Length: 167
Image 1 (cartoon, rainbow, N blue to C red):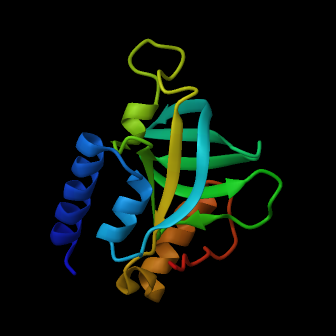
Image 2: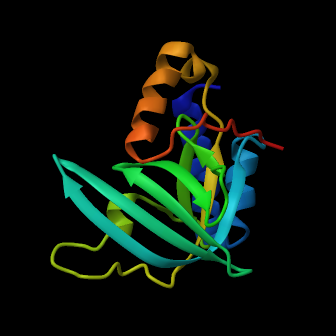
């Protein structure tokens, strides 16, 4: 299924959740034919931002329901997620990492980061899900995989990116 068709299906599913209620993660997953992976759920406990060379470098920390801390590092886009104390990441680029609120609203990093002169994100304490979507096979070709590895190395991760498996 093409990207636009998938986006339309997910948008329609989330709109239904927003209007009628229901499980936003399940609705999005069903719209993606079960290809969505729930990586973590909990509250946003910290957001740090560093602007460098026209890029927003963010670290978003999620405190899961069992108290585990999950960190997501982004350079404009989410690139790697890991559980504190774990040597291997939960997920990393080229797989897509996305935020979804319980009531079915996707959040971008520009929405999560502190706005303007605010010192704190207005989303601290907000319940959110961190979702992963396995990358298209073309993004795992050697040339593109090397490019993603280079970007991840700039964030301090020098290992091989894990490959998300749905279902």
